[in-house]
Image 1 (tube, rainbow over the protein chains, first blue to last red):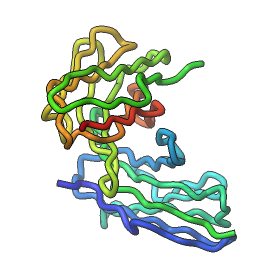
Image 2 (tube, rainbow over the protein chains, first blue to last red):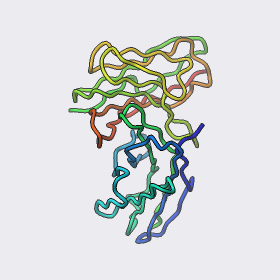
Image 3 (tube, rainbow over the protein chains, first blue to last red):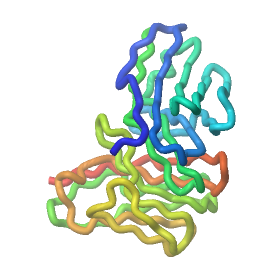
Length: 112
Length: 113
């Protein structure tokens, strides 16, 4: 039972374009929503995260938009670069911080 | 170097064999978790721990055991390996806090034949 649904599975974007990855969750007991970036052969690394009392968070070219009523959140990568080519995972952590559930991942390829 | 250390990096097992995947962190993190990563399925939580002596099951615990006798170590035991356990295994840790993300190890690629 996937509690965090992520789309699309794969994404191809031109250099300089905007990459958008979407996630939806079912459990209202989640209180922390991180995004992780993973390069081939490496472990995931925390990229950016948001808490549900905020609708948007921006760090450099990366922005999370959060819609609490729709139970959806998304990652926007502005001015996408070939070095951004990686797999991106959204995640949700339940209140109390005991469990983090991940989406299925999105493979992003940025064409030079 | 501070971080999460996983050993071994690669392992081939025969069906029915048992083994332990090691995970150690030197950041004094309370939370530790084990995930498996399979194509198209993301990272699925196997077991997690909120502190020494405290463990609980995640989404896919069957066939795996864990223990947490110290804050630093969180080994994952495969009791009787099956081909369905072929996967990449990641250990992760974090501080206890409202806005703390995970630090992941570099993974163990396990093949069961």
